[in-house]
Length: 460
Image (cartoon, rainbow, N blue to C red):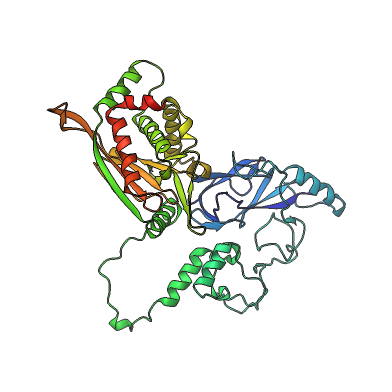
């Protein structure tokens, strides 16, 4: 006898509590293999393909493309077992079917991000039963003969003549995310008075925010006195990558007392050194890699800037390793991939890793692990054709080095006016971790290395 197993949106790691369905990769009725990707979702950090740990026939999908689901919400159901295509079966074979179902589950939850452990227990619904168990969500299951169709949802039974209302009179409130409960408490909302827009009436964060807005909205004026707006502005939801950037930048500005210092530097010798390296053969060395190598050398001299602030303990935490983030603009928005252990890499290794992460960012295949854990950020905004900026620190880091465009400019070189390749460097830093003397010393060392790359030889 086939067993219908429910696959829920798994824990995507890095504290993520929800994801938006971008694209379904399977249809109802499709046969899926164990660990086959079934849906592509977008989190606040990355685009992720979610594999199903069961093999069988897809009997139901939950959520249309564009729907936001919390972790733990049903994604789809799969009929598992040798007779997955049929709806019959004897009671004596149920034990064997359950054993077969457990064998046909991998335990993995994400491609390249799996648990490697046996699959966690999931609710099983018999395809031959007329109604699902009381604890199961009101979701469609594999087709099964039933004497009378039951279209009513499986939440709490209501009188057939009662209209749909946004109140759950009895039973548990349909909320999965602790974040939603906390948000409701902070805003003084009774979740039983909130209409859920998720599967089976599940209450999402957007529902709480909508209820708050409705409650605080002023009473509408009489229709005859209501002004008609000339135009309706476009509304762009702050969610996904855009929402994550907005939240992080706002938090950085609220919590970090930042300051910025900058200096112009003659990059002519650095450009000549890079040209000589690439002319010697072998893998090409990128300018970003040389700047990163300069950054790691500067952080070795000024470790105060490779740090974070523990506000609860009122301590500065200086970090032993440099995990270097770099800003990358993509079609999905600004992302900051992280090069692990950048302080241990050569310019050639840094070039290769920058290229790999940049390509993954453009393709939308960065994992949450690729986008977290940075300790210092390098921001090359010169690619946008601008000279300078005062960037916002990538919270919870303590500093960011900005690099403008490198352009020919008049410059006094060896006592004479000449045309040189000039770049503006800026350092935005958390004033809690150091004073201006340390920040200025860091930036001056970076500028010295840009102007005379041979300075780096002292630290190699």
